[in-house]
View 1 (cartoon, rainbow, N blue to C red):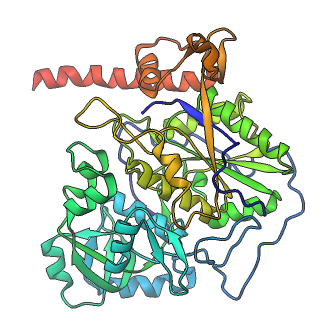
View 2 (view 1 turned 90 degrees about the horizontal axis):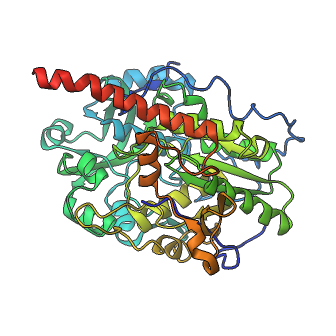
View 3 (view 1 turned 135 degrees about the vertical axis):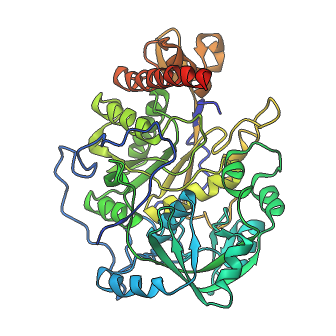
Length: 481
């Protein structure tokens, strides 16, 4: 997927100004376990917050609303069992049939439990699954529609189904054997994998990362129900303090008295073209009359494909971008979005935007080929690069979110920095794709001056050097065996 980016404000599609935690180990064994950061991103800024603007309160402690945008369904879902009830619920869970979770299943439990998928309160039952699969949305009891473009489901095999029997509730068990959650009022239904793949990705071609990792090896049954998460999900990888829930983010936006929050999702290192885009977005929002726009720099932290830069390296690189002053730490919140990555293009980008509504962002930046990738068996993009931003402009349930498409940014060889592309002198611009950037770092070749801040680039070079060292040590062992 290319790192070419776009920003364009003249065609804004939607604009409405108004106890021990559960833990599991990540995927990439190359990721070092030691913490990278030793500070909380919400307290690292030097500015003193203005007087706190109290969130709207109701009789339910789970209702957290920032002043900018309501969560889908009007209530931010919080499915973590209160601490006073955890011991009793854990004892109850021991007597129930068990359903074992994969690492990616645990990530989805994390996503659901904190309200990223509000108003969803558990893994989807069949009616929710079919609405999501065929309509990319859910119709609520009051007749309103919320976006839900990705099915959030839990698969199980024949043996597990037989063990569940006629039980109305099951215990969800993590990869390490710990009880993670209870699923109540369950429904079991058929898992038609081919239909799910075709509707979600638009293809059943082999080689799609999420399909290979999750769907192909999954069981032939889906189990849905209401989720009760026994303890907050933690990963113990030195980055948990960056995994801010929608509730925490909304409170912080109110504390900072933000009148606009613009979310930028990425799964790549930040280069100066990204920074140009984000800084220009803030400038334009100020010109529109907003007084305190806040950037939510929100890297995806769940499952990613093998050749993507690992989360810990990306977070270290993002830290350098702020340290070098490429982005302003006083107007930027860096947090991790815990969702796994599907690489499902226009279908998935709706999920990314919807989740940011629940986090309290009222602007969402979208660029070229969001959530896309190259076709797994042909030399072409899997999706039309412009369809993601077009779909967001029409997607049901996203009407309240302001969609901000980008202009193209590339490396200007005359001024030796990233700049917005000028078609009248196209020959002066160099487009550096994500693949090209990784090739530079892997081979030790420096990109053009001004492409990325030096500190951030050094992080990438060291990462690829460590990979090469690891491969060099493994090769003699393979030859010996």
